[in-house]
Length: 458
Ligand code: TRP
Image 1: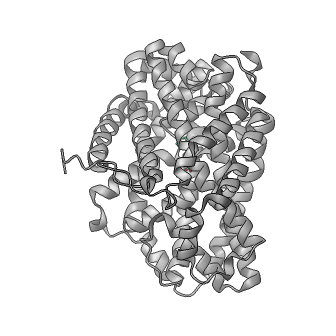
Image 2: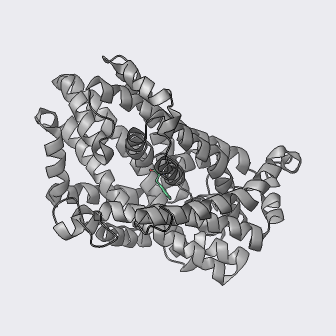
Image 3: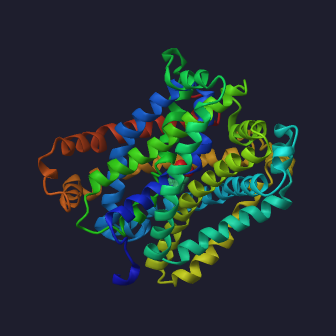
């Protein structure tokens, strides 16, 4: 398998994995979930989950991938036999579904970028109305999301070093730069301080079971855990690299972008006296309002930059999502990367059509029947969230019962000679051996109960 490629350097891998992690999840979903869940209280829970629970899962995933040097399915079956291979396959399928709806939302962002920078979107009077019509009418969206998929497929078709790594090396620094500039601007707005306070001063009685569930699913989604994305990226990492410290940097970089996004968005929201509980529309309705008030030229520049930032973040993530099934077909079926990428892109784009039509265009998709009782986009994203936490739980069980934790230790010690003597090793044993599988399994069941209103526990 020597010709499957690899990252050229540690920085290349870290940027690519951080690029996978940083996405719509950080800039679009994190702020609206935080807005709905009491601001600072949510931030606190989210950060706790990232560093205590998700970091060990990330280390485990990368170790599995680097040890087996294969796609998600191949890695599980090489280390644990065919039956465990299904866990990898389950992850690959989950990733395909995530990409199918993720690409639709990325298409909205792409459309907003183009129509704010070069069109007349900011002249609209009522942005709520505009957004409703915009996502309802798929004639434009179809092209934007197709365009986004084509760009993604093009990057992935170029391979790990020339495609994935290079794209991330350009976009990640750009993303941080735009973000910092926007924060500085946002802090100068009237009433910005109220936003900062909402975001940073936790009111602990705001923490409910909903906060905890949302915090967990967000942490998992945000770090791209639970479906083999990091097994796949890990399989392209050199043996001389330190997995534990890389994972720490990746988690930190991801949490930082979520944190900073809130810092950018809440002052803007409060400066407009808008409620932060808007939900998924927050970024698409509230922010254009802000950009509109800046006047035609500044609005175009700052608004355009914001949606460009969102597109960059989304693209580095769609790349990683497409890389997972691509690596599978290249490794398992010996297909040519440059060909299978395009087949996958078309299939996944088509899978995204029901999502695209679920925002008003087709009533049956807007209001699914029975227990499902939500629109198709929310439904599929809920299902994917659940499969991520379940996937994470099963990955821990795989390490402990099948692969064995000593094998993980040996893998982690490569590129990190002092690992065996560090406290971190004990910590990882406790977390992966007990805490993560129990908490992830238990919370997954509670989340399923709540999503489907089964009433077993609530
Ligand atoms: N983490 C990305 C975000 O926050 C989304 C993402 C990319 C993802 N790859 C993934 C989520 C793999 C789950 C699994 O937007």
